[in-house]
Image (tube, rainbow, N blue to C red; front, top):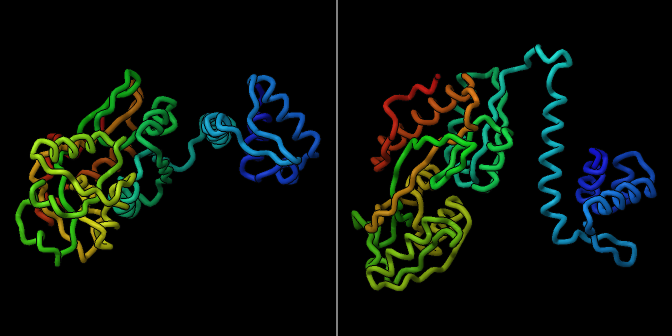
Length: 313
């Protein structure tokens, strides 16, 4: 397989047709079609359905596209290296994380980090948990921030913070007067929870089952930010990770502990055997300091699992 085949396939997907891809690539339509046909022949299956002169991506094309784009991104990174391979460009911080962190704590920490280290260029990649792990295995990032469980022989994982699930609700809600909200309190209340593919969702379901309460789930969503926004709109009470919720919370909202102790652990993951860069160490120090400051300010039960803020090796 050739890189040109990857480029042609990627461009067809983005442009929406062979003719548009040919214009973007500065090639003839027939040349683009030949390259695509050879690519499909080498793969042994079709990437597009063809009908009335139009191409429609097949189900397999999405899987191939994800892998093709990783290769193209890696090649693009190689081009960024100086020709002599020795001259360094601006310091670079390459990190990957999951959407719930990318939409809450990470941008605020990056603002502080960038003010302290203005010469450092940052590449922030946002993926699913599995995609985040794959990015580290391929060494497309220096480190990742994500919630446990995470385990892979190619990675080193260090827990940073432990926190519990909490309830997010509007300040004027009657249950906001309670110090702790239990499953019994939520018996007749609409609730917002994360989707069933999230590990903690199973623990929430189990907490309701143990107390004989049938949850009135109004919304299932993919991340904490959207759950908090649904609660802010009055759709229901959200049960989510305390740390991420604290960063996503609007002024009209409040946090109350959830009576069933469901723990979350935020961890640092890095490619095994890869030295930690100074940029990574500096960012992690900012990250941990910011979280501890927020926890103190809002009286949140967030446990720091390290002895110090220093991440220098």
